[in-house]
Length: 387
Picture 1 (cartoon, rainbow, N blue to C red):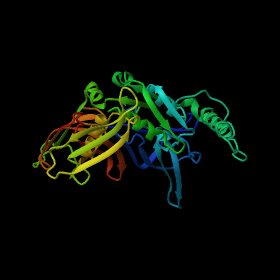
Picture 2: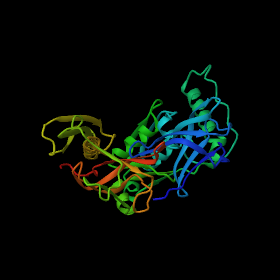
Picture 3: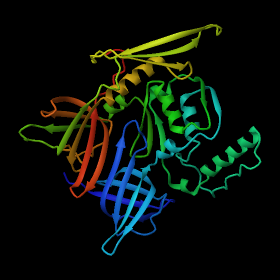
Picture 4: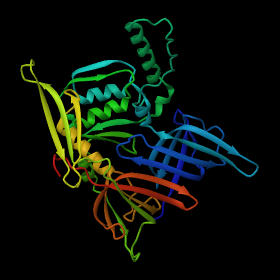
């Protein structure tokens, strides 16, 4: 399947610096659950004004598959060659690497409003263009009012940055997440990372996050979103080689991090508010031979124990089963570019796998072998207490 690959380098304000880049190698990754994915790129005969903070857009057949920010640059030169080695992460890295800049205890607020407030501490969302402010010096700060003033100045510095003018990142929620009841309490502290708090809030209600190629952070039920996309890929790996579309394969099964019984307990107040009662929810995995017990206690405002028990078991189950393939090019046999959160119909006589699996990770690579895509598959998540 023919593939047209294009790499565009942009300045901080979105101006295109170069759209005809010669590359020696690249690796653009995407992984469900991690949100912030990394890239590595080696350019030859590159412009000298490619700087830290510049943007990288990776396109396949005219559609953007990765939008990154350059965080590291190394220039290698000799009489025979000159290379620019670039690496960084996608735009969601500002959520993963950014820390909360204030103390706040949300009371009776919707999960969506809490998330928007958390993300608003970064420059992930588009803000009006303005001149960047100078961060306030902390010398002489000795009370909470001073700290609050400094945090306000720091937040203004982020929101007014010139780098904001071309950002198009947004957050979307599915209907079920939107319908969630208000959170009685949800606390953030300085030192908490923004995305850790977002992710904990989302997972505590049994939902997930996915940062998409179009710059949208999707929050909701990824299983249902997968059905709506209706894209199904195929993998064929026969012993006689007839119809095979893979270059190599590998299956890893690991039960060391899995538990047959997962208990999540929390202490909640009764309807009168003066008696504390313990609530325990157990999720089981009968597919394991060894009986191993996992226990975790959470605060009553940290989430639904049932949702957390199920999510914990499913994350363990998926991590313990990893099927990996290398395929030639970046486009599947059905003409679709390989994308995460899609079904893959696997017919593999070598690993003896004959079923639909979910594509959780995908890395587009290029080196001396040409363009290759690495696919990482595992089970679909099951949202029930016992399996």
